[in-house]
Amino acid sequence: MIDLVSAEKVFKSYVDKYNTEDDKIEVKIRHTYGVVSMSGYIAEKIGLDEENIELAKLIALLHDIGRFEQAKKFDCFIDSKDKDHAEYGINVLFENNLIRSFIKDDQYDSIILKAIKNHNKYQIEKGLTEEELLHCKIIRDADKTDNFRIKYTEEFETLYRISEEEIEKEKISDDVYEDFMNHKQIKCENRKTPLDFWVSYLAWIYDFNYDIGLKYLKDNDYVDKLINRIDYKNKDTIKKMKNIKKCANKFMSSIK
Ligand SMILES: [Fe+2]
Image (cartoon, rainbow, N blue to C red; front, side, top):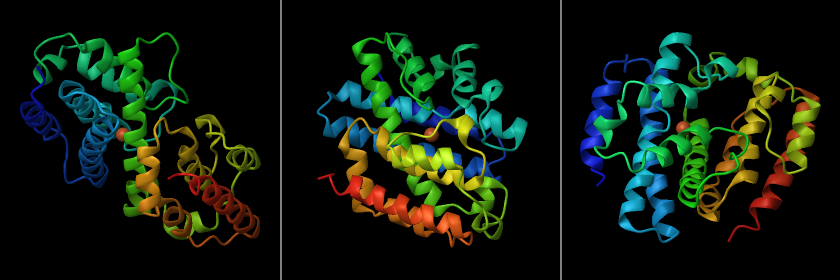
């Protein structure tokens, strides 16, 4: 049995230990609840039973739990090999059995663990069970969908720790641009400039498992909103962004 109301209370008391006045912490809390609702929405739309809808929401509640330690230790949200926030999350939940305060029985532990582990990876690992794979797909889509909202609504200072004026002057790396135009996701290690990061978020559209999240992005015009949010100053960037926009709009137009 999953008791989401009680799990949300435990989550609240967990995050209360961190500085909730900190904009980075605060944005992650709001993101978490955004993902809970999106995961529930996707799970419902694809016709899952009540228990699996609740499980999808619980995974969403826990998927970024490692972010709070990460933000406290490093004052940033940039992952690298030694500080992948999904691995942090797994440690937080499973090393000291904190998971048991969120859900009493352990029958879903491997699904929860695999879903968190795979939520931020370039692709889902091979060899998962059908249920593990299902919940990996849901959390990846829900997380990406809510992240479009975050990237559109949050201050650049909160997201990057640099100002909008600085971002406007930046360039897009050639390999990042090429990957986007070829409908590929951007590998973390290829992102060198803040605009490479920006393009990598846009490239998430190529990695949705279900059209439900994409439809939400389309209905809310998030792809154009993200592209138009920045007043690009560099000539080469302006040209590349124009093509990126065209390519993304063409792709999105196929979503019904
Ligand atoms: Fe997330």
